[in-house]
Length: 285
Image (cartoon, rainbow, N blue to C red; front, side, top):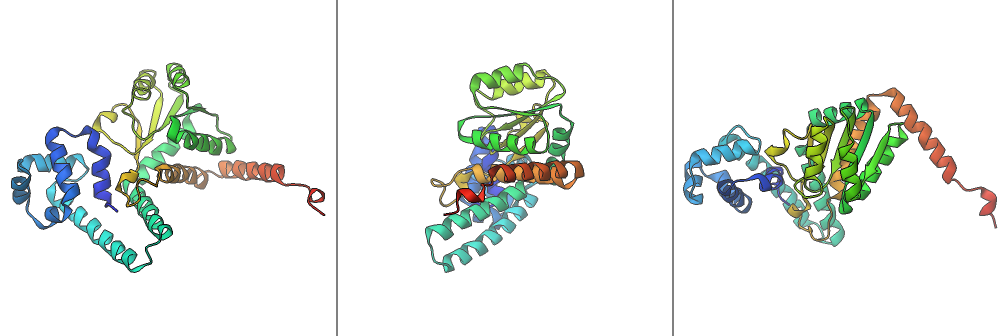
């Protein structure tokens, strides 16, 4: 399982220049060399300049190479500890995939910030209408978020059809909030809609597994989760758990800080539980 630092690098790969991509590939494949060498040795090994390496480190969120190397070393230490623990255990598919999901959730926690989550909560509470858009493989997560928000009395709509997404974003206003849940914003059916939403002054929250500096002027809050590609069993896993965990964090903050919303949730739960219960006489035999 890759470290949090590697997860951050992978999330930004679509925005890297040719030089930055060469550095990223070397770091991903040779983290131990990066940890144990100076920036001068690393630059010579990759065939680039020290300035390029420092720029790369800043782009992935660190002050410079030294801070980047320290973070990579710390992550590598804990990853090695977990690897040793897992190797001592029976290598069944259940334990192997459990370890993958556990590490993915840990990496998600490390990549998210309290500030971003709190900002998301404020945007949700202040929105007149919340529109959640998504595409095929993450559409059920959009429906889950919309259902959760409806339980606490918020006005929310989901849009998972391409035409519906375009119609939605073309009619947004400054009072609306757009929540985008997709693997990447850089796709034909999403990016143009984001530009439209921004032009109409709607607020935007994105929950994705890819990042890029070009989104900073478009999206109000970016929530980045690690991609399953870093897991040992990546072919069998999905990115759904990390996205669900993220929306649960937002929902938890909404309920924690607002007594009225908590009461609405309790009332909704009571109605649902009553509706789903079955009269005992129907099962007595």
